[in-house]
Amino acid sequence: MYKLNNVTALGVLALSVSLFASAEDASVVEQKPSYSTPVREHVSNLYWGDLHLHTKLSADAYTMETRLTSDEAYQFARGGTVTADNGMPVRLRRPLDFLAVTDHSEYLGVFAQLAADDPTLKGWKMGEEWQTLLREGRTTELAKAFANAIQTDAAEYQTPGPVRSGLWASAAAVADKYNEPGLFTAFVGYEWTSMISGDNLHRVVIYKDGAEVASKRVPFSAQDSTDPEDLWSALSAYEESTGGEVLAIAHNGNVSNGRMFSPTRLNGKPLDANYAAKRARWEPVYETTQIKGDGETHPYLSADDEFADYETWDEGNISLTQAKTPDMLQYEYSRSALKEGLRHEANLGVNPFKFGLIGSTDSHTGMSTTNEDNFFGKFAHDEPSADRTEKRMANQLQKIWKLVSSGLVAVWSEENTRESLFQAIKRREVYATTGTRIQLRFFGGWQFDAADVLRADFATLGYQKGVPMGGDLTRGANTHAPTFMVAASRDPDGANLDRVQIVKGWLDAQGNTQEKVFDVAWSAGRTIDAKTGKLASVGSTVDVANTTYSNSIGAAELATVWTDPEFNASQNAFYYARVLQIPTPRWTAYDAKYFGATIDPRAAMVTQDRAYSSPIWYTP
Image (tube, rainbow, N blue to C red):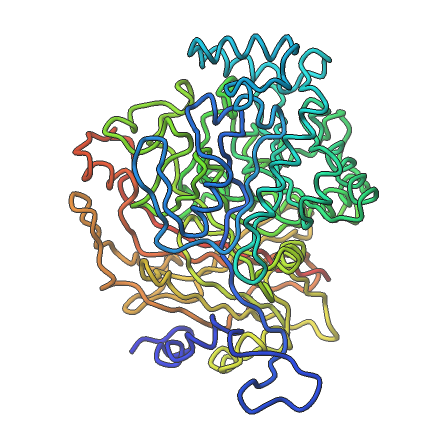
């Protein structure tokens, strides 16, 4: 038996049902509870989904050969079998609990309608030119024409108004068709596709509302404006005019070349309190990991973090039209942005970057596939084949072997409905994974002790004595350090856990941002080196050639109560949990075995999937 910071493994293992399946037998009644349904406060369940998926209704997906529909995307997410565009039948081993199909608002559905010779598009000159390119198979030219048009506000580039409204209403109606409260949630959504000189500022927009309300206003597009402040104004106008609710999620900023969290607005002025309040209001969570790289941190920014260089994309912006320079990096990654948020808050009184962490795929295949052994790429062009790893994304960008089978968003919510999930996202009770289904709880408070994590009502106690991930701690009557309860369980269909870490960021007395990573719980047989401060490696059981690994190392569950040993009551700070799995074969290894393919020697063949909780903030 091994010990996890005074918490025995035996005790933790005995808690697996009560920690992570906390609501199936619980209900709240007004009178005396019945014998079979005891009252439990603050009940929540864990739900898995993807809030960033594209189908053939996205113009870029269509030009890259995707033909799966939004109907098929929802059927697939719910556990159905679909035929991928490469001809293979595909099915998830475990269905998702929720999905948002978020096709680009710019020319939403237009290419598919042109291919179908839709009569409503007759007489639109640019559409007829594009239709000719489609018929002649000149898709590369078509893709370039689309890229040049999506941020142009000239009238001749606009989709005819009635067509645009009809296509949006139809897309929203498909979400309603597959939405079944309590069983599966289908969110209405779209992607706003702003790029400044090839620098990615994309946002996904998610509605709490159904088609009847969401379709009252057409989606905001980059042809309306490329400034996120204008997007937020459009979202505000939507809520005021319809009574609905909506939020935005910023795209992983690693291909924004420093624009995503820049201290300067697009108008050239520095961030002010009004900007900070609006951004915090409309963007409560951030997509920190997805198919185009992981965005937690970068080794240049976190030199002391041995796990910082994970699926790093740092060549340039999204179109590779501008190279990356080191000064851009601090404005692209979630950890550095969270630290920048503390600095802005000290100056403005408002934190613009107070966001929770989620993952999603950004797949353009119509299929959300995040398992290493079931990864179907970004576009239909990238789906499994003997030579896919030698291709380039969109035929001109990064090599496909760089694509990441990531990510998922996990939501702690009372029930699986649009309303409940939406509110959980707004309060940031969410976390990100790189595709695995690690189960994670994280609470902060002032009164937790080591025995609390062993209690059967661990989660209920967490809410009663503290705040969950996404919450706030303020200074109480005393100045002692906060305590954090964290419990993680492996993906039931996956790898054991290596360790649990807590990442701290803070603003020091000189106004400089700092960070530190603490190992707080780990599997048996290892200690922290007194000289280096590092925990010994968990090792690896991966057999790349045979794409196998063994759970003979690592732990099924890890849990502890941790107190910050370096706490300063006068300094603003944030804390989030990072959970690492043991090493497993990467999707490139599965390609090599299945197809007998030769993989570029620069490509990783082993991965170490992980989960990132939303932060808990401390404010004096």
